[in-house]
Length: 433
Image (cartoon, rainbow, N blue to C red; front, top):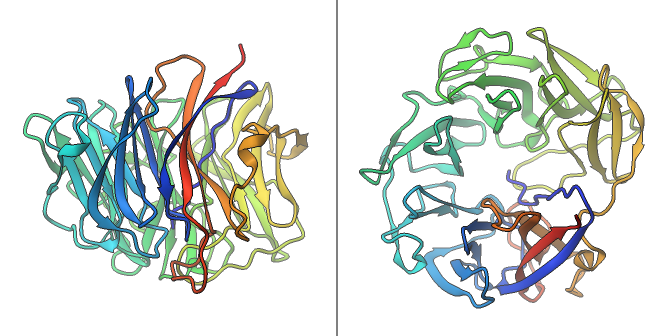
């Protein structure tokens, strides 16, 4: 399950500096798009109105786009996001449209040239059932690629590393990072590079395709993404399994925990905090925060809601509850935001000692009001956004993508009429001061 909606937090009031139309895009269901600003150029990868995988390029001082379509077409599956990166030599790497499918990977034959994309190999092994591709940078800035080999309820997490000299991929880890041993798989959040300069991950295990079978919140940390430890500092060998991994909270199957809602944050002492939800003793869904204290995990209940989110089955679902990780807000206090089907969206000021709620916090809009108006008149259409994985060259500015789609539909085709294609836009924001 992949949630393609990302949010940009601005420290000061945001203002629109520029809006640039890209192309009309597929509105029938959500799937993740990708924006990458590289120097004075900008690249976007998406599915067009006919669901064709498309890459666009422009210079930042020009609103005209060049486009190149790749030989891939999106089905009715919200897992099949598209992701890309640019390596140290300027070659563009792109991957996507995979949900338990063979590798779909393209690389440009020339630096920054979207017309030079070629289908390319990677390692050649364990690449027939791939999901959740991710490009990332390692401790020494090496270009890495990770993905799940297998399927929900039976999968392993694989890491590759790119050799710039030979323009080829090889295994970064000799063994999978995690293994479900044929009986489960790990849904991993991270790696997140913390304020301690280490890489942190947390995850839940799933027994089979039904999301209600998520269980056993787990954690590991690494200095280099190769050698992993438990929170206590004890080394853990790879692959990490249910028996060998550190269990933060032994939430059982049907215990109210779900992948996509386990988030890492850090307190003022740089201690990792895992935020998640599960059922309380009365069967209601509550937010909990688990913090690593002196090598051991201590669990705190934060919310006290009279509501149970009962989820089950497979496919991409609509989340009734969402949450953020914690962040330092002021001395002795943390901030945590949430959204709730009945209560709406909000944020709390938390006592750093015990994660109790001191008071609600005002949650000013992250975007100007005009960006929150749905343009489509088709019932149920909502706004989607995606952050820039690169960096704007101007200080105090950020870019993101915005478009509109119908909500998740369990990865099944919709019957009847669909909304008209939505305009994909790149929006440049600036902050006062």
